[in-house]
Length: 274
Image (tube, rainbow, N blue to C red; front, side):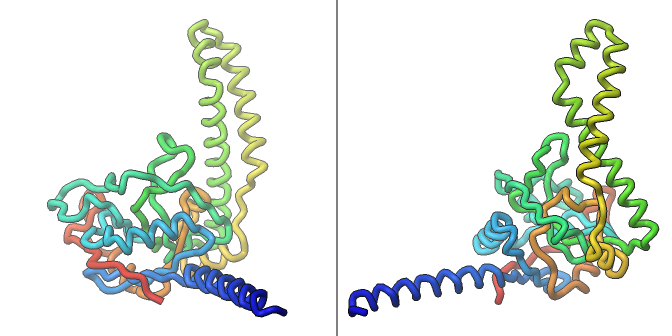
């Protein structure tokens, strides 16, 4: 091998090694969330790169410093990341603050689900956000409840019915003009026939996406707990690896009628840790 070719080979190997190390670094990214109740460390999933990279950017920019956990529900979750919560007045309603953009959903389901300790992205509801795009900054950490096997079977049934309802609503929206014309023409028979047709189609669509918990979900939900009704609807992009006791302290604080803690629980700072 000539000297020139040898140097080129070394450069290629060096570049490949740097790329692998860079990827490995991203895979191992953890964030320490220092709160007024103590520290929480979360690991970010490499399989949700848009959410991971956005969270890292906001952490490095100091976006979260001084914000509050503005929505807390015992045995469900704690939510933060509202930029408007920084220096918010007592009793001020929060939950609409963000950087002014959304992130496309990155569902890695059922591998990542809403077990206790899951880190997920908050978002606006399906009525105005059918694509389930995530908030640019708001996040929540699941605490949830423990579900016995019989409750999980009931949940599967309820979630299956919810799938049918969502499919039916989508079909109704797609046929809006036809429905409005039938109503204007007082075509009750036509409306009834269309309704039955859409119900049948919705059942068929839902049947193709049968709701069944995996063994991993059943194990987690029946032991440590979680919030299974959120699965497949919100992006899970990380999990707590240290400080779950702090999360549990936060979930149990007294709150007002809007689920805001009566005594502010603040994010003092966030930083990237290895």
